[in-house]
Length: 422
Ligand code: UD1
Image 1 (cartoon, rainbow, N blue to C red):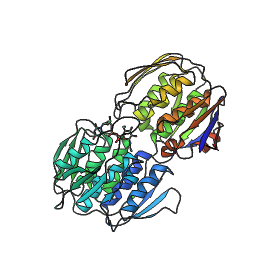
Image 2: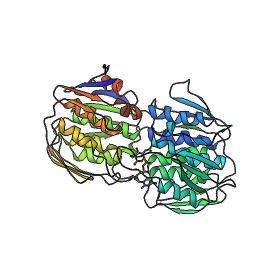
Image 3: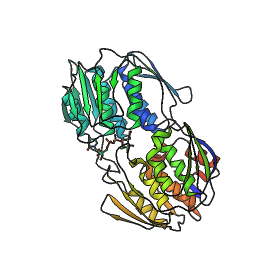
Image 4: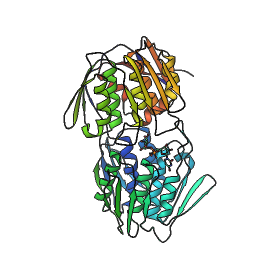
């Protein structure tokens, strides 16, 4: 079994480059199913989740060439299957985004129902309502979702009760090959939605308004493969910004799109962090003390729920009181227990609110990465804790951070990955 050993106390100094965005690349790889000719993708992060979604596409008959680092060529000329089994879907909920493009391309898609996960029950009702509105017959049996539209989908007006990222992506992709125009109201406005729409348009789709509160998709009869460079990962970049702030370091983060970082930058500035913005790089420094801040997670352009655990790790060492209100997921405080075991002073009120009194003197101990971003929060706490922090359950961290150990070591962190006997 592998573990991370972090010895706290080093300031992070230097330059780090952000990889391609996990949450953009997963739906983009799925979207390739819509194209009748091969696609070529660049800035592919080396992540476990990418390997998982490629596994799903291979199972469906897609030929994938991943011989070049950070690139993928997907030959989707033949899609031979319409079913994605449990073994492939269970490890990653995001596999469910293949349903939309597969249904559109084949007229039939059968995907194992994604289970719950650590951060909440995460239903798929909004995805299914959207497919039904487009004319698909949906049934759920033997743990599978079956979507059937042998004569193709029909454009429709769809209002999402909540701006779900996955539902927006799935419906947007399905609507690309529908007959007529689809209007999607109250969609997610995340940058990853815009990146997906840009790729779909490259492939011959007609998607307008992605990134706003109404998306219009004029259906087309055929789509071809596309060429696309994936946007930088705003969550990965944000994690390095917080690491810099917490260690009172001085780091330049390269390959970022500054406009995607606004909600985080505003909060870091409020906490006393110095930030200089350029178009594609951000300089973060924190010579002074950190002040308590108040954060409420919201759909984009609000503060991202995927940065909540990491900013809470920072709040533990801020001076004064901080608070977090988690409004997107109902159970995303798994890191609280672990941070408190390291000496933090966090009190939750219900499943959505947390008060953090700082600054705490964190001390290293053995902790677990309970989910992807909670795992990142453990590393961040370890970077400033006295002594040694040992982090287990690394598969969560490997899902979403490319070479986090190498990148932090290059900035001067004392972090190692070791093999331990069980
Ligand atoms: C995506 C991101 C994830 C991020 C989340 C919110 C990917 C691969 N993952 O997840 O990292 O934390 O957006 O920014 O892009 N909901 C429903 N019914 C549905 C769908 C969602 O009630 O049919 C609820 C969920 O339970 C949750 C909220 O909507 O409370 C947000 O979920 P959603 O935006 O769909 O997140 P994901 O797409 O799963």
